[in-house]
Length: 213
Image (cartoon, rainbow, N blue to C red; front, top):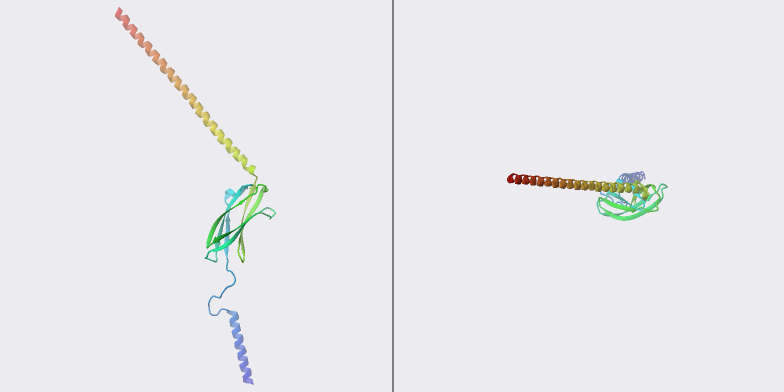
């Protein structure tokens, strides 16, 4: 009976040892186990050019979204959501699109700013939607009134008009002066011609007088 008890204890110890090994190293063979969870990982950036950091209402805001696929090298489809938030964190403009990427890609996007939107500071938020996690990036910009750009345009128009006027005036003055100079030269040559004719006639008259004497 003691022998049977001893064997039972050894058996239980062996089972406990096996369970301990499995618990510590659930994959003792060294082979990769099938993973049921997705290994998605992305890096997301947005590039907002300086000229679009102030956008008049009623015009487009252009930007570039850069996506880096950190986990997969195969081509996959992802969804990009573009949103514009106002100062009270409310969405005023939203748009989504599906794009395909491999290791990395850049996408040029645009959103139309409504004409009736209020001027102020806004946030452009871009979200990459996946089955396991969402990735976000954002950039701030300002919406201004359409007439905020009019003074600059008016000043430019005035400057161009003034420049044209000055150019025309200078050309007109040069033309008048040139005409006066030409007229003076004509008069000068005419007077010179008259003097030469008088001198010649006088010489001829003097010669005839000498012959007659």
